[in-house]
Length: 279
Image (cartoon, rainbow, N blue to C red; front, side, top):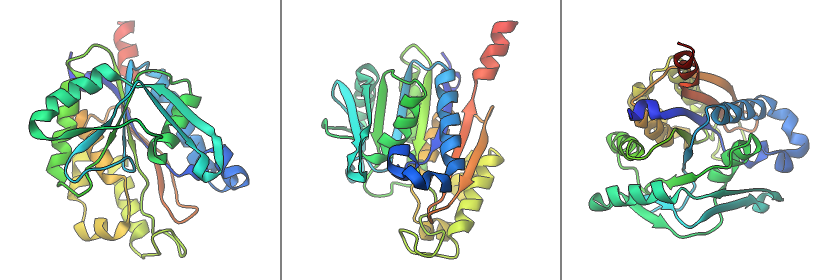
């Protein structure tokens, strides 16, 4: 099967714990657009009926130049360190796909196996919305290298993910976990920078225009001052589906606490498949 079509849907979801109701509580009213969009994106993922889900988290454990894969029989995590131990996820690991990827990448030292331990919030927050929407299937979580490896390397990893997807049956959903600039307002977590919002506007515009290849061509200085963690995961996920953009759209953007939250559908082939079945 063509892996571009096999990857049925891919999305960008932010990961601030505050958008999960048990953490945000009264502060949810300040980020209602993000919460609503996350729920919409999660429902679209589940509605695409994937057989497996792959999520890339910028906060999972890292090694210098290798991509990590969470192993073990299941994936567990909660937001207890943010005061909400009840906001938890429990999903089965996609061992078959993970073993395939480890085997494919081992010759190039691209991947390492992350021991079983509680998941990071970069994985838990998006998965919480997906689990709430009904996702309970085989899941793989990948981590990034500890040092930047260059835009072309992220594209190559995306292509490798697609190649391994094509070796197994079934439809796939891919999730890029990432927050935009952490410097959008005075008092922001990384300190205010006048170009923080500029970065967010630029990346949001590229995604709105479905110009995914151009993400790698953004102004290097702008990227360096943004203090973001959405670029690398987005490049991998869009490359994995050969920059497919059908059904893509931006669902929301806001920065109520000084960090930009962008929720976007990179592509969604569900509509095309429904049309095919109707013919």
